[in-house]
Each structure stands twice: as structure tokens, then as C-alpha cells.
Image 1 (cartoon, rainbow, N blue to C red):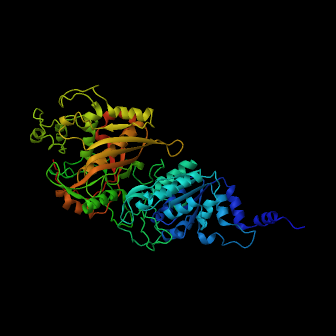
Image 2 (tube, rainbow, N blue to C red):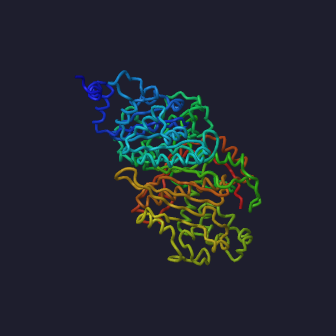
Image 3 (cartoon, rainbow, N blue to C red):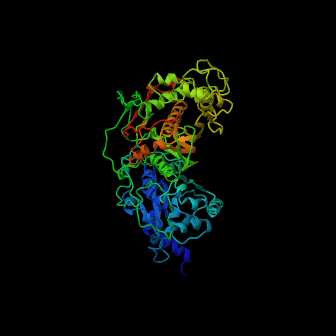
Length: 625
């Protein structure tokens, strides 16, 4: 009597090399991560994701590519890392009878977690409706209910906002109970559109995987992923068809709209996960003797004022090509300028200069991790001016003369006799700006007399409350710093432009790590030429300072703008700036521990060390008063 069919299958199956290898891997005590990519330009980031995952202890990775995804990924770049890569043709390639393995079933058995990054609109629709017409969708349909799935959508803005997409998101969440979406972000997409739909930043995706599996970084990396600050998917010989766009742009490419163009990827990207708490492996440690960087003097521009005394250590200039490095975060800023130049409305303004303006453009997001300070590089930003003004705010000071005495003249115009008189503040002495930013931060609600009055213990000290709440109740949703006080606006020389900042603490990325501090600032009036570069730097510095005092790690600064404009007399200068290719942002370090500083009020300019700031020269722009 012959054996039952299932018994014959089992006997033969254990002799198959592929199944034997899977069984060995299933008992190897490793974390098995299956990474899949679908048809989106964002698939160019797949190699970076895989490289980064391999920097964690005990991680084994295998990859599944849909046919459209293969347009954007070089298989050889992945296999060089020791990773197996599967595509549709592999599902039944080894089938030769009942003893042969079925690839989508074996991969499902092997994996502890499935990451699909990017997830295209096409594959999302198939997943929501249960279609299984390729290796990946068959794998999804056969997925074990208790195993996690992380999904990072990437598609055009109108595809993302289409109601059917929202239905698909709901259906997937309902059907696959252990699935989580890593939501897309606003950005300039590969097609040139600006809006929601770009795949989440790849470091954040890796961080979510690490957090889900509680992974730990390796102390020694394998050869294939060594020097992670200096490696990228540089072995791919891709053409720069979308070179003018951010190489992280994410228009979806459907099965019937496959692009034969590839995107040239950077050769020197840092693949340390953004969520990782390890320091960068670049040689950027603080030296004992810091050099002093000088900025040229200019009376008309906040970018060209007095020499900077902030401790900086510039890196030697290096010949730059777009294939070596791309500062995609500064490109956000430059792309927004281009967008305003092309689409902005001509509008009159208070100063009489005239502007081109747009309302509520996509937010700008800047990573602060690994000590990063987003100080624009396409022109020199007056760093000492940014720091002195921020410390002036923190001290609650409203006397512009105190800045002028230090060579910081950015408030001189608004504190002049002529300007104060024009505001009806004829009883104010020159330089007395009234209850502006710092006063509201430290004494909100107090009765303002003049800039010389002592306001100790008067009003609400919002900044102290922010720091206290971050330490004691970090998940509070009311950690807010507001400079907008309608009752006090008539007394102000200039109502605040950046009016509101909210702070947000997220969990450490791994056991023993530091909580992550992010901030979001809303700016009602955003001068793209002069003000915004200052504001990006200032609030990024403030976030770093507060994180330092709380024992947290600075994570991200998000910049939201209302009336976003370019002054007509800045057009020529900004055209010059747009011709420059952004360089890497510098690093920020504090010379004293938080316990030695004591409180936020005790910072001085000498506490800051900025390394690697190697910008282009300053660009003069006149400040409209």
C-alpha cells in the first residue's frame, strides 16, 4: 500500500536543498527581515535600506522585487551584500514535482517581518483586494496573521489623495491586523509636483524596523557594509534622467507605466539609520583647539555682518559633483524658491518693496539627528548673529541696542526713531522694541513698561514650562511656545513672524537609547531670502539646546509657513543662489554638559562648536523694514 500523498510530499521535501536551507535558517536565532520593493522611483533607496538593516546585530535580509521595481534597482548591488534577491520568475522556477518548494510559501515561513518600501498604488490596490498575480502579492496573501508587515507608500500626490487610496488603506488595516503604515511625506516629487506622497525618509523606515524588532547595532560591520558614512549604492550605473529632482522623490510607476530611466544615486550618503542613536562614524569629534571662522562685514545684509566668534572647524573644500553627494534637505528650500518664482502672485506689502507670494506651501523638514545643524550652504548664514539673537530671545531681552553692541544689526531698523514713531511708539527710546519674542517666551501676560524694567517672576515663563513638561510629562500634547499675544501687538515694534512652536517627544529607537525631541514652528510671514535661513537655523539650535538640557536627542525640525514670499529686490540674488549646488550640513556640539550649564539661561556663544561648515560665499540682500 502506497504512502498517503502528504507523507510522500514530506519525505521528498526534506531532501530539497532550498527547503533544507530554509529549515537551517529558521533555527539560526537571527532576525529574518524580508524587504520588498514595488514600482516607484523611491525604489532607488532599497539598497540603502538593506545596507542599513545589515548594520544591526543578528539580522538576515532577503529581497523581493516586482517587475516594475527592477527598473530602479540593480540586483548586483544587493547580491554584493550577501542578500538573496527574488522576482516573479523565481516563484515556480524550481518546481519539478511535489518535492519542490514554492518560493512565496518558503519566504513567508522564513521571514519574521515583511517591509514593503516603496509600496506603489498598484500593489496597494492588489493587496486591498486580495489579488495575487505575482510573487509579492502571493506572498502577502499567504502571510501569517501574527507576523508584522510594515508598509511605506509612495505615489503621486493626486494618487495619494484619491478617495480610493484611503479606502485601500482602511481595507488593508482591517484585513492585516498586524500591518502598520509608515506614512508618506510632503516634498517635490520626481514628476515636479509638490505635495504629499513621497516615501518616508529611508532612515526613518529603517528606524521603524529596528524599533519593531528591538534591534541593536553591530560593533563590527561586515566588509560589505563597512564605512557606512562613505557608501551608497554606488555600483549602479544609472542615468540621471531625473537629476534635477531630489533623488528621494517618489512618483509611483504603475505596471503599465514603467520608466526605463534610472536615477543616479549618491556615492557618499550616510546609511546610518536616522532612528539610530549611535554617533555618526565620520571623523567629526570635537578637537581641543577650535579654529574661529570669520564672516565679512556688510551693513545691508544679515548674511554679511560682523565676523563670527562662534567656534567652528571648517572642512577643507572638496571638488563637488552631483554624483558624490546631494543635500536633499537644502534642496527643499531651493525648490520652494523656484516654485514661488514660477507660481507666486505679485502682492504689495507693508514695506512698499513688493513681493511674489504663495500661501501655505508644503512644510520643510530637516533632520537634526547625529548632531546635524541645518545651516544653509548655498550662501553663508551669519551664524553668530543667529546665536546671539536666539540667546537674546531666551533671556527675554527686548533692547536692540544690546545686539548692536555685539555687532548684530538685524533689529536696528525696527528699533530706529523713525520706525518707532511710525508705529505710534513715540515715548519709546531708540532700540526699545516692546514685548516681542523674548518677552512673550519668558513673561507672557505681564504688563510691559519698557526694555529696562525688571520682569523677574512676572507673567508666564513659557520656555521654563516647556523644558519642565518635556522632562516630567513628555507625551503632553500642549508643549507649546507662543510669541503671538494679540493684546500686546500694539505695543510691539514688529509683530512676531515666527509665532508658534510645538515640541514632540518620541520613544527611544532601542532599549537604553535617548528619547527623540522634534519641533514644529509656524511662521505667519516668511521672507525666503533673508528670514527663513535664519529661522531654520535658530529653531534647530533651540531644539538642540532644549534636547541637551533634557537629556534627549534632537530628531527633527519641521517648518510650516503661511504667507511665503520673495521680496522683489531679492530676485537677482536668489537667482545666483539657485545656481549653487548644496553641500553637507555642519555638525553641532556643546562644549559643556547640561549639568555644568545648569539652565537654559546660562548658555553663551562660547558653548557652541560647529564643525564642517563649508558654505559658498555670502550673498547680499537688503532687509526690508
